[in-house]
Length: 80
Image 1 (cartoon, helix red, strand yellow):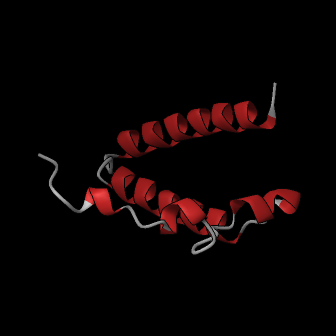
Image 2 (tube, helix red, strand yellow):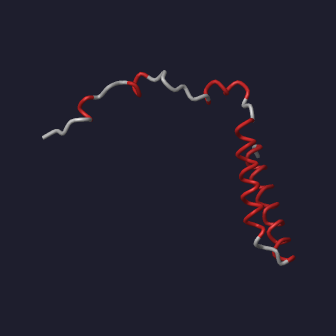
């Protein structure tokens, strides 16, 4: 199994355990707060995480694409 599959399986197990704990304590409404906080932390983690040698492929190269900057006059006029 790959690391991704293991991480997914562990997350599924832990989320189910956490949800059952919150339900048994009668505070299931906090599950939405936990979900939002964990999503925010994951977003921050992905933002600051380095992917090593593929970082150069992941960086957005705005302004360097010739196709994106090309002027297409036929898109701005009505064709009859």
